Length: 152
Image 1 (tube, one colour):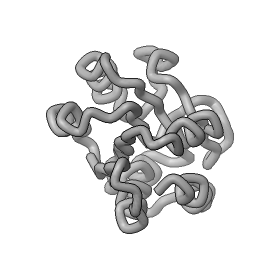
Image 2 (cartoon, rainbow, N blue to C red):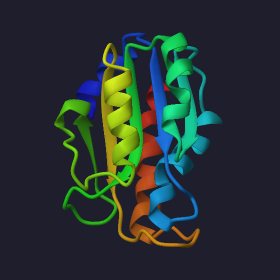
Image 3 (cartoon, one colour):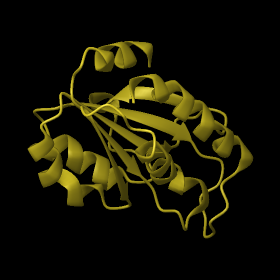
Image 4 (cartoon, helix red, strand yellow):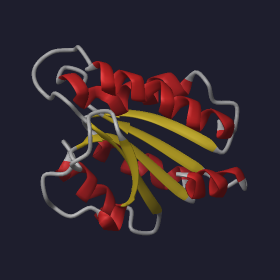
């Protein structure tokens, strides 16, 4: 994460793409983070998109912005404790049950190959019908926002 944050500080354009379905508990985490980040932006080189569960709808817009880096934020299952988060290069993501939006992330990789794409994956605890986020994932929201604040 530090390497990515240092790169962004150099003035490169960044798109932060929050993905999530807020009606499926922890799955909504990426969308929630994007919504919170929007109110904190002061850097004109950063665009935050709350794509909810349809990130493919923003491919054209992202191409117009022409960022150097795209940071996708999404709930994932990478075998960690609930609430843990990790940065992955998009090439590290295989078509397995990793993200709750595998199809969309694959589409991003295929339709935006000219961009450097990273996934900030947050290990979910519960995915099911409901709007309540687990405490461990909720705690991660504030940690992630605090990590990103210096570049906003």
